[in-house]
Image (cartoon, rainbow, N blue to C red):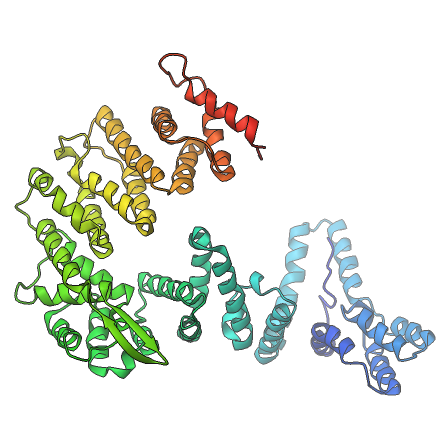
Amino acid sequence: MAVSAPGAIMDEDYFGSAAESGDEADGGQQEDDSGEGEDDAEVQQECLHKFSTRDYIMEPSIFNTLKRYFQAGGSPENVIQLLSENYTAVAQTVNLLAEWLIQTGVEPVQVQETVENHLKSLLIKHFDPRKADSIFTEEGELISDAGYQGEITSVSTACQQLEVFSRVLRTSLATILDGGEENLEKNLPEFAKMVCHGEHTYLFAQAMMSVLAQEEQGGSAVRRIAQEVQRFAQEKGHDASQITLALGTAASYPRACQALGAMLSKGALNPADITVLFKMFTSMDPPPVELIRVPAFLDLFMQSLFKPGARINQDHKHKYIHILAYAASVVETWKKNKRVSINKDELKSTSKAVETVHNLCCNENKGASELVAELSTLYQCIRFPVVAMGVLKWVDWTVSEPRYFQLQTDHTPVHLALLDEISTCHQLLHPQVLQLLVKLFETEHSQLDVMEQLELKKTLLDRMVHLLSRGYVLPVVSYIRKCLEKLDTDISLIRYFVTEVLDVIAPPYTSDFVQLFLPILENDSIAGTIKTEGEHDPVAEFIAHCKSNFIMVN
């Protein structure tokens, strides 16, 4: 058993000198860097003093000190004499004693515990919290100075020192911006966790992103990240609404700020505060529309206007609809912090669409057959992005009811057909549509028999194929690839997906698509098992095309 730490067993006087030399160990490199310009005689004297301390030859800073000493013209003879005279071999003595104990029959584990417990008691007795804090603070700054900000995003040290935190924040934010939308899901959680470490880190980060969001180039991307972090904080049970409002334009409109803050804190809309906002946004000089474009606030409208069974005061319903439509459709032009125009051209039509779909979705007397009769109306209204989001939420809440699919008789329930229309009209909603389809695909529908479950999953796969045909290719294929690799999906469903995809695709293909899709076709459970009519074999044709046009990377 080797004990590498010098001074594992020591007297109190020695422990004090070892603690002091710890500072030298941490700052050894800094001493070397700052040595230039010092008087050579002073440097030699300082180094000789260190060489004369007990067991200095065992200290990590020995090489830096030797370097400084020789660069200042020091004599090797003095070094050799001092280091050898003051070498008492504490660590080696501990190792020797430990070996003797083991040879006398004491268990190695017991010997190790004896040494560790003695060292622990000395550490507790002589521990200096302030000195320890200074060491860790310095370490964090040294790591940051060395350019390793990306390596310490999960370390609490980064969140305690402003200079270190600001560097780590800058590096992490740049990584997210460079990664783009496709890597946001991977990069964002760790960033949001770091920002939400405490109130001080959250405020600092959001204030910085608030300033960056004003930039013409890349400002909208930073605003999106800030909003995602707000959502993360909310999901973790933190009420950051006051910070959100303070960093926006709300501070200039105290009545609006109070109304918004009350609803965001409670997580629910109420007629009194909605009336305050309605009066302000129907006045001749309304507040900036940005004031009500807070994602958490807009989510509350989704729940009030589109959630099945939600109750809303009929006398105030038009106010709710007006504010949501205003936030979604009004366009303002600003120059030098002054609003020069307000475009409300789409406000009336957006309000009408929201009201129409609200009446259809929240009418508990309308069944699936009545909704089919209203499909053309729904399709027209879905062209408005805010309505499409409301319908998507409504579909999610409706089909997530345990008995929903048990009561369906149509091969493609109307609610799932609406997802196809949303996918067709709104590219930005593709991730949310896939997220819902995946949730339904992985849900245990125990109330259905085996064949009904397979048919339902085929219907869901049809929706995924449609999503793929509208341009959301890689995420859909990537999900099916994971299903195949995890071996938790009926192989007949994978074959069904492959067949449907081959029906809707044609060359040229991107390399990324081929790298994802070809291994699915070449899987032993898929290759050669898909039956085709006549001589046309789309599987073989696709594989042949890929082999002749692409270099596959494992």
